Length: 214
Image 1 (tube, rainbow, N blue to C red):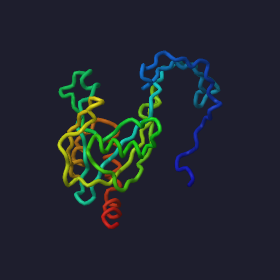
Image 2 (cartoon, rainbow, N blue to C red):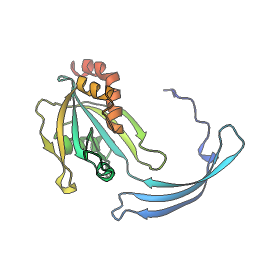
Image 3 (tube, one colour):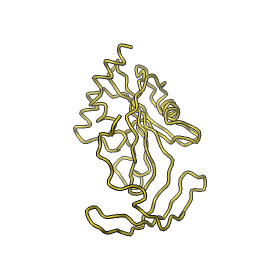
């Protein structure tokens, strides 16, 4: 399939790396922090910039958008998030779709199925990949792979989580229209949740037709 976006202007050899040093490593190997110095070309000019940046090298993650086409509802979780604690937000909680790290030896799909069970107590049925994207390419190598996954949300549990990781989640079933109302009201405040809601707004009718008749 041909690319839909125009080709990139520069290739790998157009950027030269002078330094790439480890600044700090997590004691359990979860992530590492690097200082990188490189020279990059300037768009539209015969010139270069020399830059030094700090990069967090972090494992990839997976996000599941759990959708029940019969109930026309999604399953979301509520978690306490360290960044909201740190920033002094009115509530330390955040609504999200189920997500987690891809462990060593796992594929993104296997990790997604495991996280869905751990955080929502749900079994993944049919699924469709939404895409893979860089979380914040200015400073971290973390990438997220997103799936929309068919679930049975008719008997949700109230709370889940992996106690060995001090993880605790509250599970809610949200009708599609309520999700769209929250989207239009600007209440969705994290990337995976926002991307998933926008994707479902575009593909929900097709999914209901495909998944309800197979």
